[in-house]
Image (cartoon, rainbow, N blue to C red; front, top):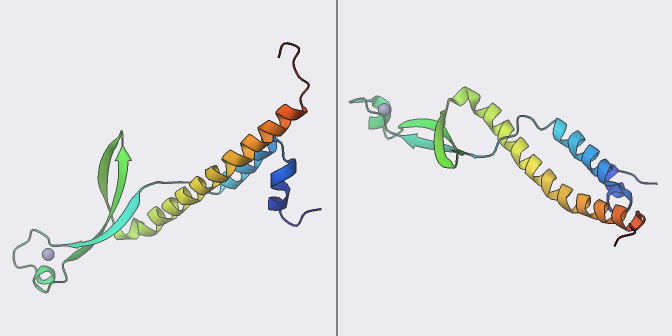
Amino acid sequence: MWHTGRMKEARFESSSEVVRWLQGEATGLWPALLGSLSFRRSPCVRANCAACMSGEQHSSYVLYGRLNGRRVAVYVPEELVPEVRRGLDNGHALQELLQQAAPRYVKALKRERAKAPKSKKS
Ligand SMILES: [Zn+2]
């Protein structure tokens, strides 16, 4: 008897149950993105720009990420910010999930190994 799926985890689950759990949890986490979204204010190139002269400047969002091993910065229009944020939140959730999956999977593999009949050669 357990109240949540979590209670089941430690002692009894099989490695294929861990995989199923992981796939199930990950289903709702797409798109999953990694990177960092920064807000910044910067001046523009126009002469006598009111926003720049008032010190207000121009706000923009930039996504920092990696592409083929290189750090890249991509401008993010304001209306896309919520969507990008959701993807980044999903990315963190997925990372968290993978962290949890590793010990559970290894423990399950070890239990299965202990239960399996020993092969004649070893
Ligand atoms: Zn300006």
